Every structure is written in C-alpha cells, then in structure tokens.
Image 1 (cartoon, rainbow, N blue to C red):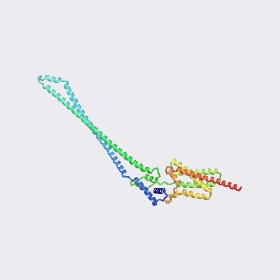
Image 2 (cartoon, rainbow, N blue to C red):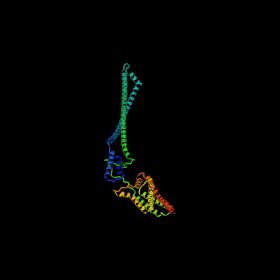
Image 3 (cartoon, one colour):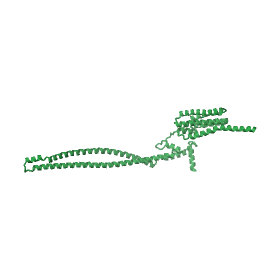
Image 4 (spheres, rainbow, N blue to C red):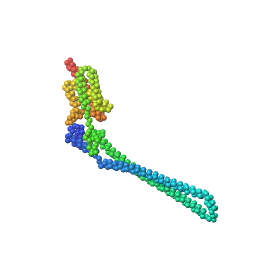
Length: 403
C-alpha cells in the first residue's frame, strides 16, 4: 500500500494535477532527479573501463608507430648490407675467374716452360721447381679466394637468419597489436551495453520524465541544461474552430424548419468547406509532413462537425441548453490559451493533446481522438431524431386520449 501510495503521488505530480513549485512537487522531482543522477553517474568500474580503453588506444598507436619505424630502418639496413655483400662477392668471383684462367693456361700450355728448360741447363731443375712453386702459389691463392667467397656466403646466410628472427619479432608485435585491438573492442562493447541498458529502461515506457532527462544533452558535471523544448498547442486553430462551430450551429438552428434533406446537406457542406479552409490555414502556419497533414485535416473536420452539432442540438432543445452549451464550448476551447497565459492555471485539453501528437509526435492519439469525435457526433446528431420520435408518440397518445 505504501508503494502504491508513492506511485499515485508520483503520477499525480508528473501529470500536473498538483501545482508546480509546491513542496510535494519539488520533493518528488528532486527524488527522481537524484535517482537519474545515480544512474548517469560514472561508476568506478566504468571509469576503469574508460581508462583501460584510453591506455590500450595509446599502446596500440605506439606499437603501430614503432612497427612502422622498425620496418623502414630494417629494410634500408638489409638493402645496404645485401648490396655491399653482392659487390664483394662479384669482385671475388672476378678475381677467382682471372686466377683460374691463369692456372688453366699454365697447365694446358707447358711448351713455353719446356723451351725454357731446353734453352737452359738440361741437368739443372731450378726452372722446373720455380714453375711448380708458381703454380702451387696460384692454386693456394685460388683456394683462399674460394674460402673468402664461402665466408661471404656464410655472412649472407647468417644475416638471413637474423632476418628470420626479425620476422618472428614482427609477428609477436602483430599479435600484441591484435590483442590490444581486441581489448579496445571489448571495452567499447561494455560501454555500449551500459549506455543502451540505461536508455532502454526509459524508452518505450511511461517514464517520460526520465526519458526526456536522459535524451537531453548532459554537461560534464552531470547537470541538464536549463533550456528545454516546449510543445505549444495550436490555440489559433482552436479559436477558429470555436468561432466556426458556433456560427455553423446557429445557422443550422435558424433553418431547423426546413426539410430534413436540406438541413442535412446544408450542415454537411458547411462543415466540410469550413473544415478544409481551417486545415489549409493550419498547414500554412505549421510545417507538417504528408501523413501528418492528412491526419490534421481529418481531425479538424470531425472536430468542427462534433462542435457545431452540439450547438445545433442544444439550441433545438431550448435557449437555456443552447446558452449553457455555448458557454461550455467557449471555456473548453479557451482553456489552452489560459493555460499558456496564466502560470497558476493548469488544464489538460484532450483536443490539444491530439493536435500536439500529430504535430510533434507520431500521431499515436489520432485514432483515439477520431473515435471519440465520431462517437460524440453520432450521439449528438441522433438526439433530435429521438426527440421527434418521442414528441410524435406523445401527440399520438394525446389524440387517442381525446378520442
């Protein structure tokens, strides 16, 4: 029961049944605001998630920059090293080729050496030994060159192994980058789920105060800006409908002795023409979409028919009911204007709510408003027929009594 009592007080305060600025109003709204502030306040867990997301973004940026710089330096260094080794290997190959050609020439053409032996002392083997030493030195030099070439190739192989190790390091850095990116995505998902969880509690329900509070831009301090959008009812259209319905009702009552077909045609044509003119005026004043314009026109015509039918039927019943109906209709249509002009006056006008639903919202009250107007118009238009039937039966009863 206490909980139901609190809900009733909260609903009465929000819907404006109590005057704004009272202690009850301020207390309930302050309590609601404190609850909303509690929901919107950044918790320690949320703050940790935001800091983790920020750190991961910085670490990811640093990893990408270091990876780019390292790869650029590595490519330049590897290109320089390979070019130097390639030049050294080409020079060694040229020297080896020249030395091999010389040794091959000596081995394949011993005639020159033989003639030297023949010209010298036949018993002296100094020249042969000298040629053998020269050839042996050339072969040793050729072997040294092949060893240096092998060392250069080993250096290239070792550097290639270093390249493989660098590739493995790059793979590790790429794995770290993927891990940081995954952490960023997870943190973003957590923040998104928190935001949707908060807004989902207010969207689609009856907590319009909470939803409007959450939908407004929020300052860093958590306060809502003072400026709020205010939906103003179309009081000009309401005043025009009031005047037009009074005139049509008086005019239709003036020709009440005309035939039924003439009265019906006159009443319908007047309401249709005047309703279309009022709707066109409203569409020029207020910018509406195509579907909103159709709903605006239909509701205005039916509102004019129901209002003029009330005046016509009231005056048909008598001057006193007609005067009461006129005064009540004037107060009903002037109440939204008084609500805007007088701060201490509050009135929930259903017609204004339907108009504002069409103008500012999705038109969810349009069907309900149309149904109510059709019901009122049908009841009011049926009253004269019921009265005529009752009078006819009364007259028949009097005639039978006199007979």
